[in-house]
Image 1 (cartoon, helix red, strand yellow):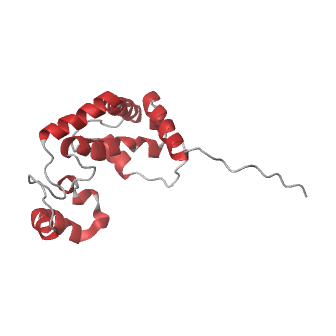
Image 2 (cartoon, one colour):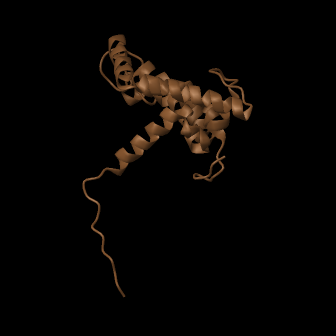
Image 3 (tube, one colour):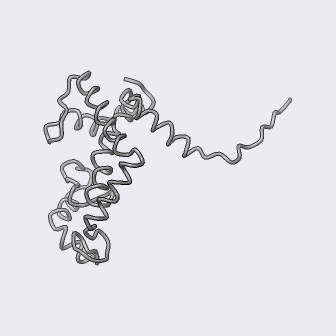
Length: 167
């Protein structure tokens, strides 16, 4: 038996390759062709926009318990009592000064927005919205920013457990 031994790949970065492919997919609109790709709109509208609005990728006051029923009644209670919970944890939630989840100064948020503008992040966000709207129209789903956004709720809640299928 003949065994061919190939040298192990060296000096590459698979994560960077995936990042580049995802960026190309977003720029050209290919991401809307798969269930998991379409979910990039949800990530953009939550994590992406929270970064620009608050300076954090996860912001407790923006997480709605009804969107995460798997978290149960304890999470719902925590959200209702978020300031009390954060104070007990030693956070500086929505307050000025140092500390976890503190209020990020406006000048810092403006600088963060400028970084997004200069590096192409703002344009990429625009393209995600544009191509997502196109797909919503194709699917016959209402597209918008409010709670009545059928397309957003569809991509947020649909899971066909076929991560590689094209629809």
